[in-house]
Image (cartoon, rainbow, N blue to C red; front, top):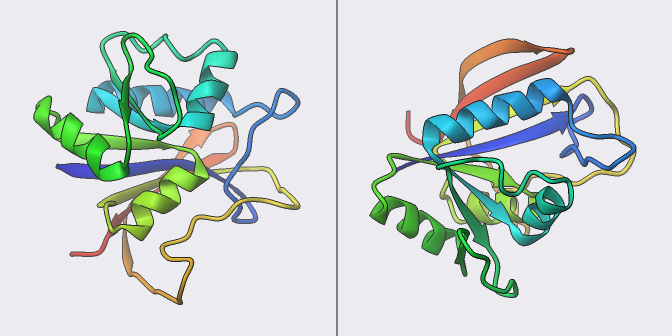
Length: 170
Protein backbone atom coordinates (compact mmCIF):
# COMPACT_ATOMS: atom_id res chain seq x y z
CA UNK A 1 0.00 0.00 0.00
CA UNK A 2 1.29 3.44 -0.92
CA UNK A 3 1.22 5.98 1.92
CA UNK A 4 0.94 9.68 1.15
CA UNK A 5 1.55 12.33 3.81
CA UNK A 6 -0.39 15.53 3.03
CA UNK A 7 0.45 18.75 4.89
CA UNK A 8 0.32 22.50 4.58
CA UNK A 9 3.54 24.34 5.42
CA UNK A 10 4.16 28.05 5.86
CA UNK A 11 6.47 29.95 3.54
CA UNK A 12 9.10 29.93 6.30
CA UNK A 13 8.95 26.14 6.64
CA UNK A 14 6.78 25.64 9.71
CA UNK A 15 3.94 23.15 9.87
CA UNK A 16 0.97 25.47 9.28
CA UNK A 17 -1.40 25.76 12.22
CA UNK A 18 -4.92 26.97 11.69
CA UNK A 19 -7.20 28.79 14.06
CA UNK A 20 -10.50 30.64 13.79
CA UNK A 21 -8.51 33.85 13.21
CA UNK A 22 -6.26 32.15 10.60
CA UNK A 23 -8.25 29.39 8.90
CA UNK A 24 -6.71 27.15 6.26
CA UNK A 25 -6.78 28.48 2.70
CA UNK A 26 -9.76 27.30 0.61
CA UNK A 27 -7.44 26.05 -2.14
CA UNK A 28 -5.61 23.79 0.34
CA UNK A 29 -8.88 22.45 1.76
CA UNK A 30 -10.21 21.75 -1.74
CA UNK A 31 -6.97 19.94 -2.59
CA UNK A 32 -7.23 17.83 0.57
CA UNK A 33 -10.83 16.89 -0.22
CA UNK A 34 -9.82 15.83 -3.74
CA UNK A 35 -6.96 13.65 -2.42
CA UNK A 36 -9.23 12.10 0.25
CA UNK A 37 -11.86 11.28 -2.37
CA UNK A 38 -9.27 9.75 -4.71
CA UNK A 39 -7.69 7.64 -1.93
CA UNK A 40 -11.08 6.82 -0.42
CA UNK A 41 -9.68 7.40 3.06
CA UNK A 42 -7.63 9.56 5.35
CA UNK A 43 -5.86 9.11 8.66
CA UNK A 44 -5.81 11.84 11.33
CA UNK A 45 -4.77 12.20 14.93
CA UNK A 46 -7.25 12.77 17.74
CA UNK A 47 -6.70 16.53 18.11
CA UNK A 48 -7.00 17.11 14.37
CA UNK A 49 -10.19 15.05 14.23
CA UNK A 50 -11.67 16.93 17.19
CA UNK A 51 -10.78 20.21 15.45
CA UNK A 52 -12.51 18.99 12.30
CA UNK A 53 -15.62 18.10 14.31
CA UNK A 54 -15.64 21.49 16.03
CA UNK A 55 -15.39 23.20 12.63
CA UNK A 56 -18.26 21.06 11.31
CA UNK A 57 -16.14 19.03 8.90
CA UNK A 58 -15.86 15.69 10.69
CA UNK A 59 -18.73 14.05 8.87
CA UNK A 60 -18.77 15.67 5.42
CA UNK A 61 -16.68 13.09 3.56
CA UNK A 62 -19.39 10.67 2.40
CA UNK A 63 -17.97 7.22 1.62
CA UNK A 64 -14.40 8.11 2.62
CA UNK A 65 -12.99 5.88 5.39
CA UNK A 66 -11.76 8.05 8.26
CA UNK A 67 -9.27 6.51 10.68
CA UNK A 68 -8.36 8.34 13.90
CA UNK A 69 -5.09 7.28 15.50
CA UNK A 70 -5.48 7.59 19.25
CA UNK A 71 -5.11 5.61 22.43
CA UNK A 72 -7.48 7.87 24.37
CA UNK A 73 -10.51 8.62 22.20
CA UNK A 74 -13.90 7.04 22.83
CA UNK A 75 -15.41 5.01 19.95
CA UNK A 76 -17.24 7.16 17.39
CA UNK A 77 -20.00 5.71 15.18
CA UNK A 78 -18.82 5.45 11.57
CA UNK A 79 -15.20 6.28 12.44
CA UNK A 80 -12.44 3.71 12.91
CA UNK A 81 -10.07 4.26 15.82
CA UNK A 82 -6.59 2.73 15.56
CA UNK A 83 -4.03 2.55 18.34
CA UNK A 84 -0.99 3.13 16.12
CA UNK A 85 0.06 4.22 12.62
CA UNK A 86 0.71 0.57 11.66
CA UNK A 87 -2.72 -0.48 12.92
CA UNK A 88 -4.33 2.30 10.83
CA UNK A 89 -2.49 1.14 7.69
CA UNK A 90 -3.34 -2.52 8.35
CA UNK A 91 -7.03 -1.61 8.67
CA UNK A 92 -7.06 0.32 5.38
CA UNK A 93 -5.18 -2.44 3.58
CA UNK A 94 -7.69 -5.02 4.85
CA UNK A 95 -10.47 -2.80 3.47
CA UNK A 96 -8.80 -3.02 0.03
CA UNK A 97 -7.39 0.51 -0.24
CA UNK A 98 -4.35 0.91 -2.51
CA UNK A 99 -3.34 4.28 -1.02
CA UNK A 100 -3.52 5.68 2.50
CA UNK A 101 -3.70 9.46 2.92
CA UNK A 102 -2.08 10.67 6.14
CA UNK A 103 -3.79 13.95 6.86
CA UNK A 104 -2.68 15.43 10.16
CA UNK A 105 -1.53 16.71 12.66
CA UNK A 106 2.14 17.21 13.31
CA UNK A 107 2.48 14.47 15.96
CA UNK A 108 0.81 11.93 13.67
CA UNK A 109 2.93 12.99 10.68
CA UNK A 110 6.08 12.71 12.78
CA UNK A 111 5.05 9.24 14.01
CA UNK A 112 4.58 7.99 10.42
CA UNK A 113 7.83 9.64 9.28
CA UNK A 114 9.78 8.35 12.28
CA UNK A 115 8.62 4.78 11.63
CA UNK A 116 9.51 4.98 7.93
CA UNK A 117 5.88 4.53 6.87
CA UNK A 118 5.69 7.32 4.25
CA UNK A 119 6.18 6.75 0.51
CA UNK A 120 5.19 10.17 -0.78
CA UNK A 121 4.94 13.71 0.57
CA UNK A 122 2.52 16.38 -0.59
CA UNK A 123 3.36 19.80 0.81
CA UNK A 124 1.15 22.78 0.10
CA UNK A 125 3.27 25.84 0.83
CA UNK A 126 0.98 28.68 1.93
CA UNK A 127 1.92 32.35 1.52
CA UNK A 128 2.07 33.04 5.26
CA UNK A 129 4.81 33.30 7.88
CA UNK A 130 4.50 31.97 11.43
CA UNK A 131 6.79 32.94 14.27
CA UNK A 132 6.61 29.85 16.43
CA UNK A 133 5.61 26.72 14.67
CA UNK A 134 5.70 22.97 14.67
CA UNK A 135 8.14 21.02 12.55
CA UNK A 136 8.02 17.74 10.69
CA UNK A 137 10.79 15.40 11.82
CA UNK A 138 11.94 11.93 10.83
CA UNK A 139 13.62 11.17 14.15
CA UNK A 140 13.83 13.20 17.33
CA UNK A 141 16.46 11.06 19.11
CA UNK A 142 19.32 11.41 16.66
CA UNK A 143 20.27 13.15 13.43
CA UNK A 144 18.81 11.43 10.40
CA UNK A 145 18.86 12.30 6.72
CA UNK A 146 16.56 10.93 4.01
CA UNK A 147 16.60 11.77 0.32
CA UNK A 148 13.41 12.78 -1.45
CA UNK A 149 12.79 13.09 -5.18
CA UNK A 150 10.64 15.92 -6.55
CA UNK A 151 7.79 14.40 -8.57
CA UNK A 152 5.68 17.47 -9.27
CA UNK A 153 5.31 21.15 -8.51
CA UNK A 154 2.20 23.16 -9.30
CA UNK A 155 0.31 26.26 -8.17
CA UNK A 156 -3.06 25.62 -6.49
CA UNK A 157 -4.20 29.26 -6.52
CA UNK A 158 -4.33 31.78 -3.72
CA UNK A 159 -0.53 31.89 -3.69
CA UNK A 160 -0.23 28.22 -2.64
CA UNK A 161 2.40 26.05 -4.33
CA UNK A 162 2.13 22.28 -4.09
CA UNK A 163 5.31 20.19 -3.95
CA UNK A 164 5.07 16.41 -4.33
CA UNK A 165 8.02 14.18 -3.40
CA UNK A 166 8.84 10.46 -3.38
CA UNK A 167 10.58 9.37 -0.19
CA UNK A 168 13.29 6.72 0.07
CA UNK A 169 13.43 4.15 -2.74
CA UNK A 170 13.82 5.61 -6.23
